Length: 124
Length: 124
DNA sequence: CAACCGTATTAACCCATCTAATACAGTTAG
DNA sequence: CTAACTGTATTAGATGGGTTAATACGGTTG
Image 1 (tube, rainbow over the protein chains, first blue to last red):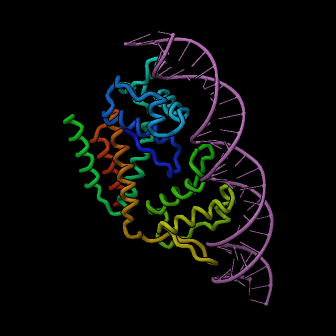
Image 2: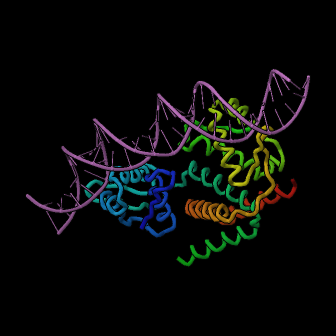
Image 3: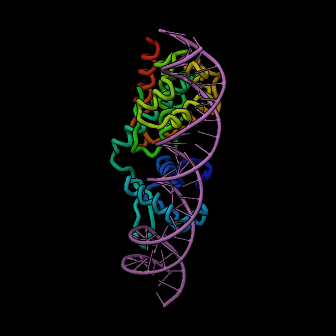
């Protein structure tokens, strides 16, 4: 379900956050879908439960999941557009686009890429 | 010229690398333009020269600048498309686009954004 | 009641980052 | 030629975030 790169300089809990957020955002984890339990995912990835707990806590804080003691953690329906997050993402989008164009990728190619995504998204 | 965020969890030398790479990639630092010296930039940002040196060393390794003992460090003309870097950037581009669309931004808006960049780039 | 859930807390360790101090060789202007 | 710059290298030390470990408590469920 998730792959951790231990060589990566990025903290494990950040990698877990990103991987789960991605699964939710892509629709792979639909709203109300149950996530693996803290202990289960920890043993699966061979890392400490505290690390997973931190990832879950922050994902809940950011509105991507909901955790209920005794029951589990669940993917959440789209939260009202987090403008801070959107700003961050737009900056990342721009930076990537700028350097890609510098490296020779055309804007047309990037647009085509956006179309592909949309097509894939619509058929779901 | 560069702004460092000391609260940011990202290492200073990474922030410096990104800022400089961005200046080069955007054309703000044209090829052969001289960069601030290691010591100068260090005192300007109030950080240790070793930290700047590390950023410069890695930027040179990645082909973005050239350093010459006794002379200085200089922006470099576009290096042959680094395919690993391009792959990385395309992944970042896709991830940002996916989550932005999830948050309600339309593909059309993103395309328009690419056009703006192109227009700005052409007039330079 | 047993076996799961999420959650909290404390202590300890490790390692990347950053700083500090110093040194050496190449370049360049006065 | 020398002083003042460059980049570069090395060693040592302090700091802090990330991670682990162990343990505990309350809610849920069959």
